[in-house]
Length: 121
Image (cartoon, rainbow, N blue to C red; front, side, top):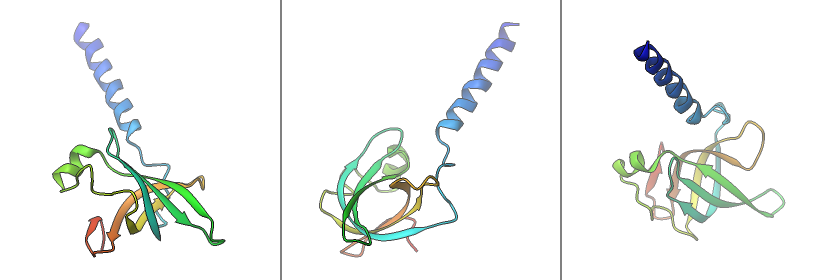
């Protein structure tokens, strides 16, 4: 009986972890590509965040939050805590939020010197 209880507990915790890492809030059918200025790069678990400033159609600067993957996997792909610096001018691609809020899921970024991060094709 004890093994059964442990098995159920393990199964339930696995579902909880999977739910935490869901990307269901992003519109995977739409890709936004804009020029932005990096305000801050947050190298945090469980996901990194790129805080950017985008000028809207009326010329007003808006703060956006772009969620990336976890630092461990990104580090293995060459990212570092200083991969984005405040003031960097970038072209960034992301999947916007389904609810229209000023956030999105990171796809890729291209820097002024031509180097890229993420999925940039």
